[in-house]
Length: 249
Image (cartoon, rainbow, N blue to C red; front, side, top):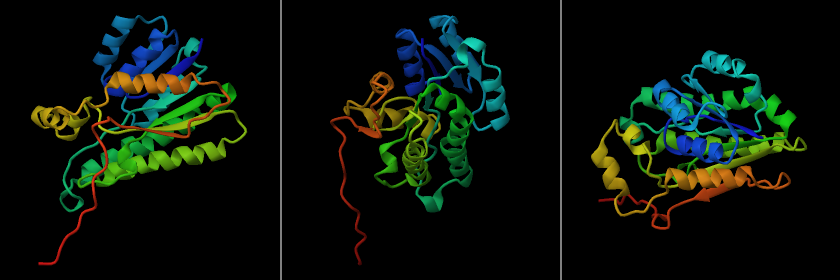
């Protein structure tokens, strides 16, 4: 039986992935800030193959303590899914909130790198896999994307760097980069503006959390001699825009 650790397991992609892997018979470690949501997951799925750990992923001491406290049955981690992340604000850089920038960097970059570093010895010993959730925003800029896009570009490049450094260890590394997906993402980004979220996704047939969970499961269960370096997933209704031009008046 394999074991997977999924960060950000209380909503969206993370919660769907917890359910997908648990339903397939894996041991699952689900982490997140909201203990009540983790408890609800455990109540729904049972605790025999599900271990939950509530902590703020930006707090390294809490992260270390949670890993140190893993029950023996959950210590042999085969797959790490670095899912925890967020976007905050839609303002252009010159009007953006610096505190929001720092929170995105602390969550999407620093915490992801820290969790990876802490679990690398185990993942190498298990010849496991690291699945990092990036975004198309790391490849394609858009107005208001600024630091969020920068953090996701880090995820993509960090994944490639890990692949290079882990050459010969048997550890697989994948950057999964989704486009428009209907989760709590836009609600968080807009401080709970349900209208903004509904308007963005209306009629677009966006990616669902379950779609992404299925993608993660497919990658995690590929034969061990295959590595998906990077996978970009978008709704059919989403494609690419043109360049902007500010014309002289």
